[in-house]
Length: 302
Ligand SMILES: NC(=O)c1ccc[n+]([C@@H]2O[C@H](COP(=O)([O-])OP(=O)(O)OC[C@H]3O[C@@H](n4cnc5c(N)ncnc54)[C@H](OP(=O)(O)O)[C@@H]3O)[C@@H](O)[C@H]2O)c1
Image (cartoon, rainbow, N blue to C red; front, side, top):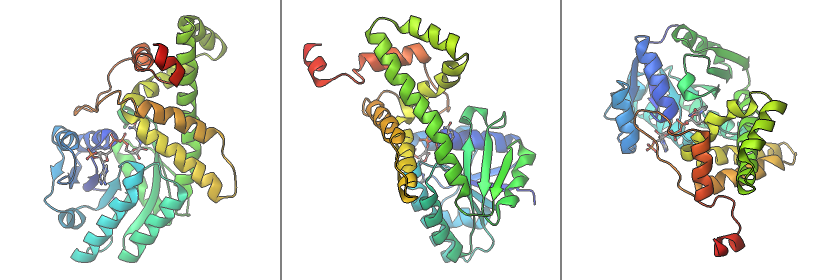
């Protein structure tokens, strides 16, 4: 079934690019943003999203609600939707959680939505917000996952992983471990290279040994200016997922620490046009100047 009205919670960086793509394809995009910050509300306006006065109106009007929020809010958003569905008696609402959450959180969300009669699809987004409609892929799982294939008509590639509720989340945490792990590793090593006065030489040798690798990660490193805290949370989800399944994780906590150290610097602000600022070298220089990874002893002498 084709979708005509899609609700997005919320219009952050990724939500903005979903909204723009869907609007461009003639879909009416709805949101409830009364409890959101100024930047998200402005982004919604810029993308032509219709802001509804209540969550009840949103669940009544939308055929599908896509949750694209910070991972720790995913469960809360699902609870609000379930409550509104209970209040309005809305039937057959489809709900796609597209957040980087752990499989345990996906199961918890299913336990909130299914009793309310909402069809829950677990999902995850692979690729950047800016590449929505240009290659960014959505993986989905769960009994109703096939229904998401209707989004392909709007230029969103959908890959169905299977019928289990939390498969897409498990897929994402493992995938995210590579991308965020590489971001943390590169930042740490390049801070060292900068300290030793060898930044250009080290970058050149990385390029010779691993052509294109640092280039591919550069945009994500620039994105750490505003997304480091969320990405650190994703590494926590990865560690908890391994632990839940009786496995230890050493790499995820290490990446988490670097990302948390970047987040603590307050290095950048989201823009209401959804655009990112700066390039790799500027970002590294700014992180270095702000004292990223500097020891307490070095702080005293600087
Ligand atoms: N950005 C990317 O390139 C990218 C790539 C792949 C996957 N993703 C996934 O997409 C999701 C969103 O990422 P993002 O980059 O768009 O993050 P973001 O720019 O930080 O946006 C997060 C959005 O969630 C809203 N939010 C926060 N708490 C909420 C709550 N309790 N209820 C409702 N909305 C709430 C924020 O509103 P406020 O303005 O009020 O804070 C903001 O609109 C994440 O799960 C991420 O893993 C993003």
